[in-house]
Image (cartoon, rainbow, N blue to C red):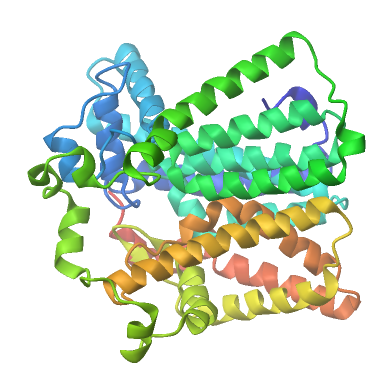
Length: 458
């Protein structure tokens, strides 16, 4: 869906050269990590690789078995697209190189994930161009993304977040083009196709799909005179509608059936498997060992000295989200404890200046602000709900869960910085941002923390 015309706006001089350098550095670090990291360092990589292997044994949906139970993930009535694609890649590897070792197969899948992540970076640039009209400022979101340590770390491993991030970033790009381009039906169809594919990869894309759908309907209502009558394009229209129907059907067969049959987006393990099978799951074992039963109420948690929702949001949640976004967390972790205070200054400074200086001039900017806030609030609610269940020990708290909207967040951050009216303050804030992201980025980490990282490498 990303056509040649979409890429014609890439500047091959000046900013284009800078973009190529940023991409080259990102690729070099990601490929180096992909080739050298030990198995099991990247978050959940062993489970994702094992599931990919399981899907390679059939062209359909393989049944759950003892191996999948032990991984804590089950196939029935769950999104599966990432594993199905990996299964086909493994089939191709076996065809081209019979007898490929587990390590060789793992590395090839890692390189495919690096390609997914590189696509996400490039589409982030195209998203930036839709809202930022200065060729050098357009590069800022790309620089920020490629120096977000968890994003770069994740790119080097086998993890379904890489494909989910690519699809959501592409969906957001075409969503913005609904507002900025003439082909309303084409762009509307394509953003829905990408997001529908994303929800077949990971169910946590659903809140983003909901937020984008609401913003899209509001746009149609406000601009109904410009939108209607909708222009159709013959065979292209039929193909897009067929794809949408197929993807909507696939999503309904998972989430729609789950809502009807199990009254939830995903069924509980005991609803589709035997109790003895569920007992093998590490997630179930963690629940039995660490969960508070029954789950605390908000009032009970406050009485026990835990933070109230507001205090949790502005202190605990922001702190840990920054720590887990600009650090690396998986089966081995690195947290930039000495830098997180500066990321917090940057975050709260950007929020404060956004209130004064952003002043959205278009429905698109309002929409991206609303979508980002909505998704972040859903994530905050989910994290706080987990804290009530596990006693505020941050189980299930991952910075990578904000990545579906990290593109819009970095674009909006750049717009805020660009709109600071006092030149000295604008230059100082931009310099502080670029310096902080470089110091906390992959190049500095690789050079200064070799002792920490060396134990991660083969």
